[in-house]
Image 1 (cartoon, rainbow, N blue to C red):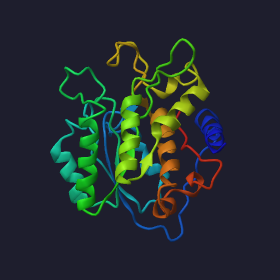
Image 2: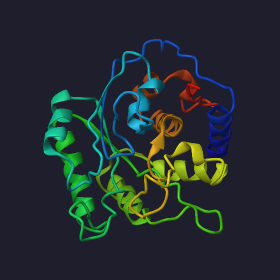
Image 3: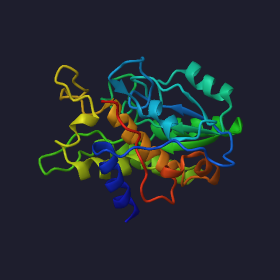
Image 4: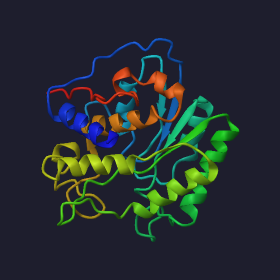
Amino acid sequence: MKTLMLVRSLLILTFGCGCAIAQDVPNASKLKIGIIGDSTVCNYPAGSRQEGWGEELPSYFSADTTFLNTAEKGRSTKTFPAAHWKQILDFKPDYVLIQFGHNDSHEKSRPEATDAATDFRENLKRYIAEARASGIVAVLVTPVHRRTFDESGHLTTELEPYVTAMREVAKEVDTPLVDLYQASGVFFESLGEKASDTLTMNTVSNADQQGKPDRTHFTTKGAKAIAGLVATELAKVDPKLMAAVLPSMSASSSTPAIPPTNP
């Protein structure tokens, strides 16, 4: 029921006229949040039509929450730059959000590919252990769904082995999980393929790894929508995060808001 209410709100506020009004959060802790991941998460140059959800996530948090997003295009749990990870550890955030799986799932001959049953899990555990050693809470974020629909109108499921692995690792080592795969899947299917076209790059000249129009990487509108899902789920992870998330996005709210897209 809560998931359906969230989706209705996202539909109205992504494609309608609703907007979020920034509000100060009384007594919100001054949190630091690090983010690592791939091209669906990373920052892009100013003015780019393409954005990652990590770029938009700060707009859902109080102004005194500090972010460092070192996610990078094309990277996996195996090929994420050590220097980028060191930046996160040196930043000493309270939480680090970790989303991988897209590039890990590539053809096994590719250098970034990992096996969901073996090295993908071990790599995740290494990040978690190193974060904990630095006093940082690692929050695993399951990979956002590719917006690729099958003939029956449902999303394809090629990422599921990596999603399952991440869920199991989170339980095994007792670290928080944001199930973005589940949340984004419900969101995209509620919209349908045609109505959700504006959320991803979706141009024939910018084909993804499957040789199809790009259904993986986000426009500004798409990045804002996905960041809204992440913020809503993060508010459920810890009271400190709930205090830092803007009131309209809190877990207790039935109407999480998406900041308006500039015309």
